[in-house]
Image (cartoon, rainbow over all chains, first blue to last red; front, side):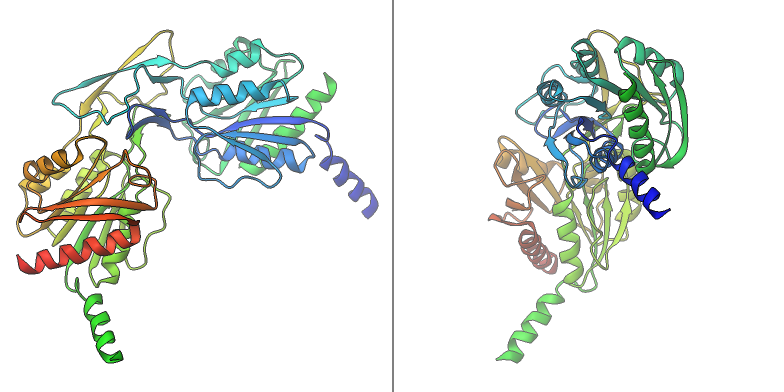
Length: 230
Length: 230
């Protein structure tokens, strides 16, 4: 009956009610000098879709985003950051206040050892740019986890499953979402994605190519179920 | 009289009629691996404003743009490129067919010596990224100049005038447009700009802070006058 459908829709709509969800999205920009930056191709689309979907499912959503050109989803609290260091601070500040944390941001794992305040003049010949490791946000989240359900993303071009499994364990994640960005229509700038999901509880789920909007809904349904059972 | 105003407007509208104008805009992206890139903060706004204004002034406009999120101005032929090498090839292909060439693009002057097809895995400790010089497009344009009026941009943070003057001479430009990007509301991501213009013929013109749309109109009027007299 129509009443059943409405009840079902309303149940589905409420699966994240009362949950505080923290999502990170986009790239980071690491400053070399006032002109040059080290960054990556993350568009932020997957994270923004997740934020919109989580809000629709009743969650209270905070979205921490690197520099992207996307509109903030309705009802979502957005915090903008630039560098990996900014991102680290913002995420760590927010962490304790959230129940579900989904880290889709492609945070640079290297940043220039020295950042110049004036534009570096070019010289003849090659230049050696020394990069240092940035703080590993996912590692810190895993270590400082109390009650949070922690979801990481792994965007890889080779040995994607093995690398994803290692990430799940090493970073003490509850779920890892793996995508093979060497495939067409998957990953950074695409509107579609195909992902492979591994959970700490041993589940393996494959979501074939579909829109990032649908992937976001599927992922959040799975997360909601896992959270309910833990 | 109204007729005078209309004639004047129509004269102004026609000052670049019959001229083919080539404009480059935006940043370039230099690939480190499938995820990481070296780039800069150029928004492309100044170049796109110049393209729109040149089209309104009757010119036939080709706009070669790096990755930006701007709409192509009406009536402008746009060619998209990613890397400095792409930009070099596109500009050199187009050069001979154009009368006025304005290079606003912030082309990376360094690119990774090696570009990896697979995502480079992070390791502990610092990483040395070797960068090599890219081809100097403005230098090549200066050297291969036949009939073209060549305009370069200099975005600097210190000693801006001295550096701009050196650029005018070294690159055999007809005009250099200097802006001090250490100042607020000037340069890369701003909608306004303030520039200092030097010409090969010894002119020095200062345009104080105004919108990039107005700066574009001012610049093209000056260029049209200079071209007419040469």
